[in-house]
Image (cartoon, rainbow, N blue to C red; front, side, top):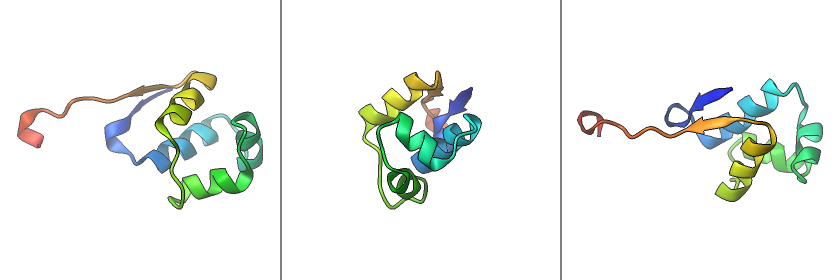
Length: 75
């Protein structure tokens, strides 16, 4: 899976990754050492995920996140 991060909010990326793994929030949280409530709060924008945790999640699920520099005309 390849995600262009510029097109989404972090909460949307977490949800996309979880849905692509066919895991519910409880199962996904268990694999990340988080509760179902924690995953739910992240996906709904009430909590944020630390960057290191985000990177670890991507490694665990073999997800490649790409950040592209916007060209100067789009700034």
